[in-house]
Length: 423
Image (cartoon, rainbow, N blue to C red; front, side, top):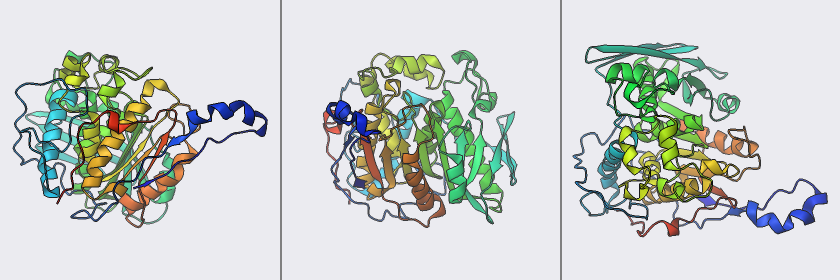
């Protein structure tokens, strides 16, 4: 992981003296490099051939919860022991997954009994049947120039990383409307959309996990299509704002996704819940829970006391390891909680480092344009590099942390654990 810093860009010599005193507000926090990436077994850049590698791991959830103002130790198992080998991460990740489902997102069910559909150069159809219930949805496809099959990036809500850059780099764009799978504006006891048609309108699963389930079903159909148009083993996902929350969940819960790119995801996305509760101007967990049924119903018990959560979002970051992760954040909008986002990325990066994959995670909040979900020139090159590395597999991207001085994150303030050397 390469960590760099830069000073503020001053737009005019006329105002240089006037803003000199404020320069520290826009400098980038340089984070010392503590580990370099090494080859991870199976290839650090490769996605898994299965949705959930740890599905066979036995997980017993804790019987009681204890308040802890510090971030939970991602290396400490539920039984209190710590993992000591990289091979143990598979089942430790399964524990984090179950904790996240039980207390944060709600359950993301495994592949339904029947998933069928089709893939063409312009469209993907998905048909799902399970326990006597059926639902369908579709997504449009935009191919890049050249001959396929192509890697592809699922773009939630048509609102994510710059699609022109994605296609110019050589990947297709799959425009996925998550609202067809989990509709916003519905009460928690009457959720609507393709997911809830299958699992019931009173399901305790929140919209983000439902949206992630929909992305997984798209990948199922691509797998079954024979790979003539799109490559099932080279799929990325992106989204901004609420769709950034969804993209983050999709990448965390499906290990077939090779590259996850959430943008300005805010509360319920990348930022740690413990930090949002105290970060000035950030959307608090209670607001994120009440705005839409994004999070699982069980999260209601933690809206006022996130310190009681046995899991936090740095561990959701860690669930994506060692696969590609490019987090884009905006320090100019307080509501987005970029300080808590930086802490979350730094915490999750410790798992990447321990797995020998420190170069596979990038966090970038050093941007000049403060508009929410703007298309930013600072992200264009790392976006290209990440697509080349994790989807085209012909690059050698090096992960970077470019943390804006407007919203610096200090991991040492939030952890009382150290990163182990895993054998």
